[in-house]
Length: 585
Image 1 (cartoon, one colour):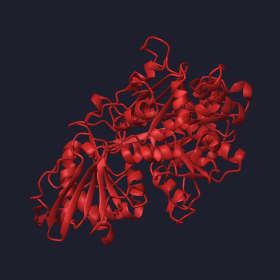
Image 2: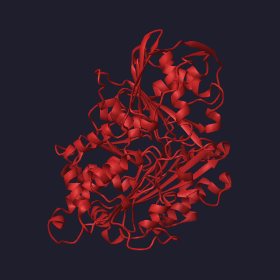
Image 3: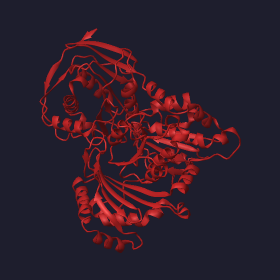
Image 4: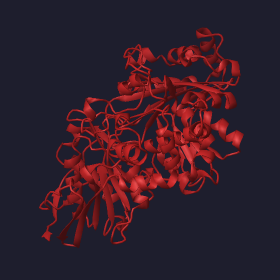
């Protein structure tokens, strides 16, 4: 057995190590600076209680993006030096963010060990490669992201750090081969276990969904399917689940080989970046993929926690997706057969879920953006299904959003709605049929999001400041609006969203600027914390339509007047210098 020594390395604080909503994300060149990663990792160890470090089991893996291999070796050496007992690593450094959450919650080692937390190496939907983004975040023993009480401590520690311990002479661990490597250190034995990335997650999915009914759907000749991993970590699960377990043809998988630079693409599952899938599904304005599009298509982001759902020539908004899953979960998904405990959405997400909750008599919660707020509700047994407009959907099976779970949920609903079709020759119930039936039952929330990425941070703050200032005089706001589009309803109220957590009583302020109109329309403005440089302004525009004769309009046409009002009221072009957004969803 190889032994190692621990040495103390002197360091000094490095500016800008404040974790955002999903950890610390920066350019690779920033993380490669001397002591940059080490400072943040040690600041995290120092923010945890002793029993979560000394003698503990930690998971260290991620989406396989560029710099992951080097980062894992550094974290393993620091974990050994800090007295961690064992580190679990997904083979080839690959574990999706939802799989990490599942492993913390479900996996038991051969010696009975359970993980108390994880370092997840991902920048989620941001690009990867030597000139692109890297990220790191810490998840707790619940499987969910570290709460603000911990991330605040981490940040404070980064501002005062003077040294960190490291086992410099610990040999490089081969993370491509499954097995356990044992070492001996000053505090005793230290193990690194490399294990199959998919086993635990697949087992969990099979306990939630009726794989046989989905398999029957996928084998039906008229039902065709396409899944695009965008060369992210979802590729490590796609073949195993969709091909091996569910019998889909190999040709139904697109870009399912994980690559450290995501094949040079942007691993964000939306209509802008999932170009190949969008073309194959018949939704591209320029590319014609040729042939008849599949009945169902889906995409994942870099770390596989986000999802996009498409029907043949039909886009399902994430806000509608979570509402439709909630409305159909009890009948279609065995895990929910005894009923839903409650549902929740992030504040910027459309109110489609609210209407379902009201109709079904379910507890409903509106929370700030950030999965940790859902996690609190789930830990308290108050929420079963939740989602956010930024392509995140999930349930209380883990404490992260889960892209593949969402795809399996939709396939389960399709299988449930097509029971008679699969047994005979009835017409196939399509994704579009399900969505339009949902609108007919609950009304339609026309919804769009405009993203202005890498905007000058000062200009972005000034724009938000103007919007807050305008809220002090709603008559003046309504006068401006009438001057832009007289047919747009008056603003009834406006505020900065604030959330008091019903579980722990904590208050989250300044969570987004809202303008709420008399007819149920909404304008929401937020600064996003998930980019690696500059600021991202997100603008959300929503209009509710109950009239069944008006639910079939083109979304951009229906929202046109409100979009115009939002851009002029905020002076978007004046502040950002942009005549159009980077991404429209």
